[in-house]
Amino acid sequence: MDIGRVGVWHPMIGKAPAEEARHAAATIESLGYGSLWVNEGLGSKEPLVMSAVLLAATRRIAVGTGIANLWVRDATAMAAGAAALGDAFPDRFLLGIGVSHAPLVAGRGHDYAKPLAAMRTYLEAMDQADRTLPVPSTPAPRVLAALRPKMLELSRDLADGAHSYFVPPEHTAQARRILGPGPLLIPEQAVVLESDPARAREIARAHMSHYLTLPNYLNNLRTLGFTDEDFAGGGSNRLADAIVAWGDADAIRKRVHAHLDAGADHVVIQPLSPDTPDLAHALTQLTDLAQPLGL
Image (tube, rainbow, N blue to C red; front, side):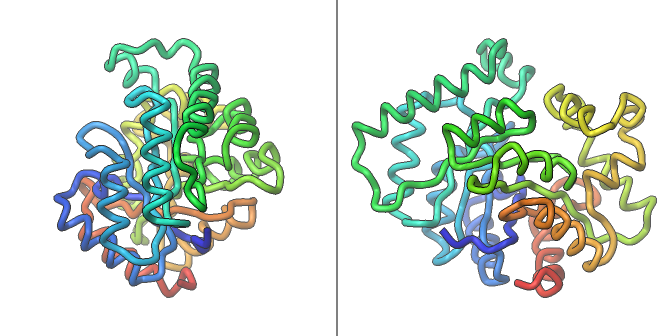
């Protein structure tokens, strides 16, 4: 699978009306980005179905689930969905799977007490289901939403790599050391083309506000040297600058290359907007960034 070095992650890809999402996917493909990721969260459409919609509307770009929640569908359904997409769109679909977060999982009536064990059992059940399914000529790679060492080790041992989120390049370097040289490592990087520090950090804090309520992200950031002081008040300047790359196109390019230099195979950028996520504004930023990113 040739997805190049830079792709796109945006929450509205999985929420926008289908025609708007198809147009966005075709535009992103025409700009030269190598991948497009569909999330699964509150208000988003079913990500495997939406992946099929976007794959059918494009010709080259790869589409990944970022991230399909294992608590939402059983392992057999996940394996069958991935097999169908891998067969219909060879070398263009990546299955991203994750355990989500305790507050969100509890809201669905599940027990989040042992997420690592749940993921291991789920992957083993997927492997068993795969043995009963027609085998695509090129099975879809599966990557895990992974932040901490144990889940990264599982990404290495029972998957094809990791898709990390809400991380600076320092985490990418740590993840590569755990994964070793072979597995895929695909971090997300939030970006905003805004050179005014106060305005850029305001946009960054609005983006971070939800994630700073989720223990998985906070615990991971603590291992990177951030403290409760960095999480207070919407996030310190240090944290905002680490999580969101802001400035001109060259500043964004340097942050993307920092992840690549740290061991990422592919970086998916998430363009932020001043208020709520805005797909049209994201496309404008992606257009302005395409050439500086060497697409």
